Length: 248
Length: 223
View 1 (spheres, chains in turn brown, purple):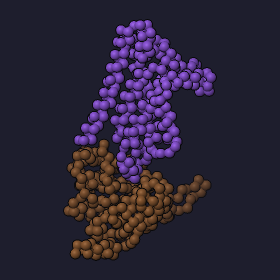
View 2 (cartoon, chains in turn blue, red):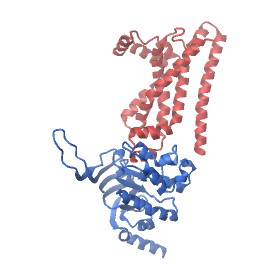
View 3 (tube, rainbow over the protein chains, first blue to last red):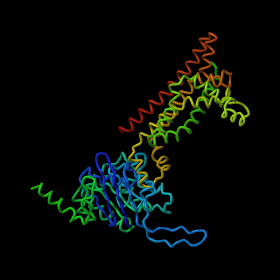
View 4 (cartoon, rainbow over the protein chains, first blue to last red):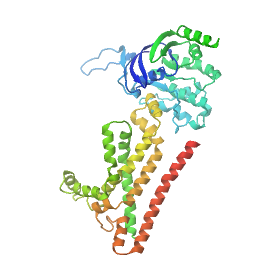
């Protein structure tokens, strides 16, 4: 599934001017803090006021059958998302801050998207699979205030992964608060989840190691603009040299 | 002690509280959901009873619900009699008079819900109504207790609007506060004192509930 995005506008002191093609299975938005990475995700989510956005998804377009005769056959086309409400964009989102619903247990947090879905799958297997993927079954009955920072982040990720009918998974600093061992343990399952379901993932990070580990299509941002896009090792080569120079 | 007045006062305060919670919830949700002049104007109108003399409010309600206005004539056509000097006339007057005490705690409660939670819920596919029902309402439930208790207590204590809209009909529109006024007029200070003690007790218990809930919330946040 392919997404096309253009966002322009002022976000606080930052002038955001970003045009992106999101065609890879996993795309990483990389850049220093304050460069506009999170704003790009929020713009895609339809919750960033004051920006002009063009956002479209290349997907199977269903054609309505006319009463007077057969309609055109279904085909692949661009579905405009920029004017749709946040809940109608087919997104799943894990925010940087966690933002777990404090009045819901771990299971209910993870099952939130399923519970509010207008057309839910008959069985809630996606919720159990997300709980398994992030090793949360033992914590199901706990409330968010009873969790450690790392556990909260796993619930945050599981909640996004358990969104039925998601067409784009957006993860803001998904490994913040997780130790490296756990990150390396979870990562293959997360990548496989997206590939297996045909759901592209876009994640945000300012960590070079994380971007290189993912080895995904990488978009490097600075000052609200895209300065490079391509394979992680190419896009981040200059960043690695700069880091090594700083170490020396 | 004027027990019919006590019963009527409690019935009036209960019905007014229920009516106002139903009316104030969508109104407060709308006010807290954005900015703009429209919302500011509505908020100012809702807050008017806080500053208007109750007799002014009562006067306009009495005239507005009477046969000289279209609304009044419509009500008379529907019910067969005017609303003034009836229990339901008192409910309308009390609802208008206590509206800010129901709306303002709810606006504060809804606006106090973390914006990040609301945005995340929307981006996880929840419709605006589902976001309100599943996230905003449960997280602002203490505001409902505050709104209910303040509305109840304020309705129990009202005098001017009740007197203007309802008059002083024993068993129909004579509430506790009017009963105290009547007892004082008759120089029955002992009776007025007994009735007043009831009002002080009711008001104190109501405020105690509000502050106890506030303390519990702070305790929960710390824990």
